Length: 224
Image (cartoon, rainbow, N blue to C red):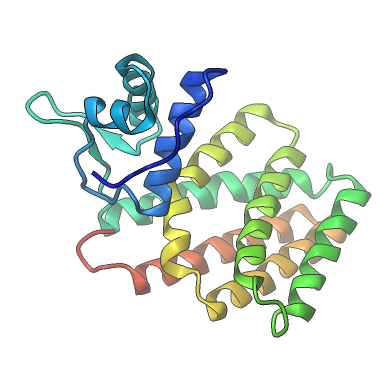
């Protein structure tokens, strides 16, 4: 098995184990369809099997690990239909979040998002770590709008579905796709600055539809 990480601190061990396995799934170190062994993971992480078992149960609830009575758990394999369904849920949830955020987001939060977006747009040809910064901004942007919706249950669902699609960022993280996504973020911001809920919802829906097309274009035809 691939070496996963250094030994973990005993504080908040269960959450540390969950995060360690999650990051290895999202990074591709544990690829789609791979078997996961509780014993093997416990040895790699230098912990007992109990926190590993609990982490795998939680990842199963997240939809990232699949359990079978006859086989070891496996990292979930997403077919094209599954991917389309995940993005459809994002479209519904994040469209609603943007619609609510249009009348609730704080002006200083909007100014901060706009400044970050403008900084990325102006610096993309100079900054050697631009792609990483763009991916970080994408995560921050969507999480900020989820919080600005002022609906805890909606926020939790948005974050859950974004977790499920984070792995696809590795597939579509080209400069061209990231620049396109940034321009889509700017259109959403324009609607938010105008305090226009309907325009914000439509701009978010357009953004997620465009990202789905990018994923399906880059994905392996049968599965990701």
